[in-house]
Image: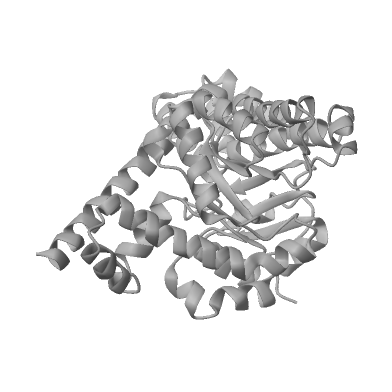
Length: 375
């Protein structure tokens, strides 16, 4: 059995954090479903920018759409819609056999709308209606405005993947927004069955930021005992944060708060771990998979992490263990002046900016190609 498939034994679904035309038309996605148990796909503006700019698979469509008079934004919409529809169709059997737990593909609204709830809602509804696949999730960032959009989109019966969650407060806002959206539907006598959502907690970026702050502190520190303590905290913040959020997730959706909605057919908002590639080469390349195996969760892996886990990953339950230790890690970081909850807001802001940059880079590239085809 593939090592990735073994994650299913512990209640975790491996999803693929990538999409590109070759994956869909070559049959490779179907192979990953069959051989590795891949049961979902996530995308974002950075993934699409790399896919479209890094491949000639899209050029014929870009030429055709350009000659039809479409601008770069409409071309982007056409290209991404085609990929998402094909991926959703390939994953549809997984969606059905898993009783709608897995088999989803995600597409993100424009990152330029991250702080505009009304525009996010309108764009999410447009994309969802256009693609018209039951197993599609619309990605909305976990900004304050995004939380309002999540509530209203859920109330409208639209599946949402909430992205760029880093802090516990981000997670609490998003999970409560989902619950309120379901409650709004119930209050109007509308069904809540077959409405789905995931909350995507981005992992590795937290260690990247916190480790940098620890290094800066150690350079100024003269007390050897303090230096050793800070060295012992390196590479531990992200997993600690994940364990604390997982504890809240389980108390929210597996406890009494959700029972009434569950009795009406509502689905839990599953916790998803994203950004699981290892950025620091001194850490294990499967660190953010092995240490986060847990029931009722999703781990979405980029290709390098898929390859690494296939080769030497070990699947065993780890997420629910060490909660007290995780809380202690956070306390020690705070004692050294690093308040992870505050750092996480900066990371989220940077994440939105990075997606905006990728989105704009791709549109600029598409405009350049379009002008060549229509000149």
